[in-house]
Length: 364
Ligand SMILES: NC(=O)c1ccc[n+]([C@@H]2O[C@H](COP(=O)([O-])OP(=O)(O)OC[C@H]3O[C@@H](n4cnc5c(N)ncnc54)[C@H](O)[C@@H]3O)[C@@H](O)[C@H]2O)c1
Image 1 (cartoon, rainbow, N blue to C red):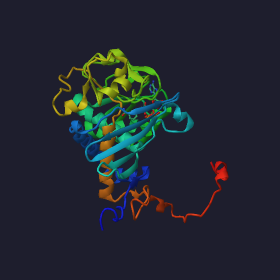
Image 2: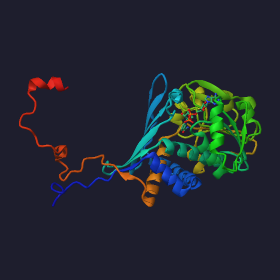
Image 3: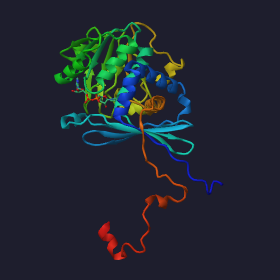
Image 4: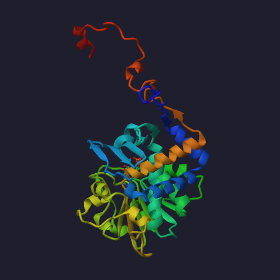
């Protein structure tokens, strides 16, 4: 048998649904999943130069954005499809919905198709913690959490488990979102303080996390709310025309981003001139740039979400699914005995004359 007659390898694409991801989290434990994801993201950020990187491709419309986020190293290619539609919740839909693919670079074989809505929330919180581990004061115990929607519990618990946050000061323009968050976190040892405004939430906080969704140039955090030593974890300003931080907040201390070409378009730094100084996080992680340099410095992580975080998250979830035997096969690519005989996958015998040429337009 030579390569011309050899049957094509049987392609095993795996599928991870939201239920599969939930099962992985329940089996491993949420704290362990966050810790594993932080390490996966950190180890990939430390290999920064090995990745073929590009800013995401965004398709904007009146209500939101749909984005494709591709990235690859020499072995693995991934992409994520993700939307951001802040008004979706009024229609009973999530603001953010996502799925993605992990493929083998050598052959182009799709190895995994996975949900990425839950996984995005996990990886975003893990990235925020990874940044805070270098940028926030290690003795930070109080976090303001402004925006109490889908991402908020993930941020709360990642900071509780991995950064030692003990108290959350909560604010959302929608009081029912805060109540939902308080119900979901009632079983934890976190002290939950409901606040009357963003300024009230920021009072006494070591870290401010903003994770609001609004398609406007918002200024949720203004300089008067920021005191020396604070770390700001800005998560919700992630699209052109969608910000959370006043421009003067960005001037209060060093600003850290994931991938500058993307962040300058999408992040809170979109408000700043093209030469406004930003430091990419990977440089802090590998020691080529400094993170926080003193206890009274203000630091800002202007997060937008970068494809490498999804690469790490997909690879981490795939490793967990294989180790735990969770997931299912997805018959995505035709199984062919002869890789040149794609036609055989149609299965049906070829009729002598099925359609008169004159009938074809009627079927179109
Ligand atoms: N940086 C990243 O990697 C990343 C990843 C995922 C999501 N996001 C962004 O995070 C944001 C939140 O996502 P979500 O899935 O939690 O959305 P969501 O719609 O579920 O929740 C957003 C919450 O923000 C609240 N809000 C809106 N304006 C506010 C304001 N001015 N003050 C206080 N609260 C306000 C809303 O009432 C809502 O409860 C979105 O903008 C999304 O695009 C960023």
